[in-house]
Amino acid sequence: MVTVAVAGGTGHVGKTIVEELRNSHKHKVIVLSRTSTRPDNPVIPEIVVDYGNVEQVTRVLDTNNVHTVISTIAVLNAATGQSELDLVAAAAKSSATKRFIASNWGGVFPADESLRIPFQHFRMATLRALEETDLEWTQFQNGYFVDYYGMPYVESNLKPLTFVLDVANKAASIPGTGNETMTLTYSKDLAKFVVAALDLQKWTYPMICYSDKTTWNKAVSLAEEYRGMHAAEVQIMSELTTAGTKFQVAYDSIERLRSGEITELPAHASAYSFISRPALYDIQSKFGLYVAYGLFDVPEEGSLNRLFPEIKTTKVEEIIGMWKDK
View 1: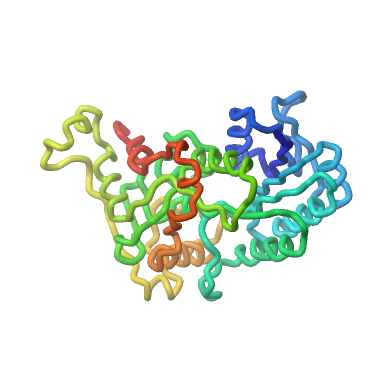
View 2: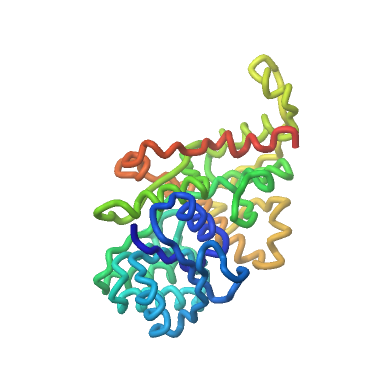
């Protein structure tokens, strides 16, 4: 048993990892946070830190004998990127800390720089900084989160984010042909793999895990089957000639995606309160290219799924199936 510090562990992926660490009873866990979000005497200790104060963070790591730091900081800009760099510096100075998991929790960084999203440059800077330390470090690659396609009915700490499939509004904008393999991971499955990886004697880079693989054409078909379908229909679905409801589906070609264009989905309108349309188009058109080029298809060989076959993962149909009766 070691002490694990989860930076940014009060929400999103971080909170899910903290919950799994607590439930596993394998390690002691503390949460590092920029602001206090919990009541006094929480089940999991939460320590407020100023990441820019490297000496303070180092003292926190040493005082709590933190062996492993898991960063779930949402590295989206220069400021949050610097916070993670400062956390790396603190971990490197700590006499107690030996391991570090960098924040990413998604796909690969494309070798083609024209395909990179601005925030990926900040995340890559973290990896370069880690290379200069004596820490054992890694990063997780898990494709794309499947949680989004069961919201608001799936149990998840993630916030809604619509990409390709807008189940609520019965629409889809599919990149490429729709037959490219897509890796999807449920955040709770990811957390189980993270906790399991802590017990490995040696880490590899990257750490690969996933819940299920499918294609977007198949995912849309599942959504059409379940969206608006009643329980009785699901039970006899194989006997029905028609079931569910048809979605409005568009296909975005590689050429269209290369030009930074996507087919806008109804759910995107709600995103414009916190992200501009050009920024959303830039991110999602590049994500679309990742799909078309196979960058969201993580390899099975060497994956944590192979190392830990006892971890039973969630199928895409289980998540989309939560729309039954809705």
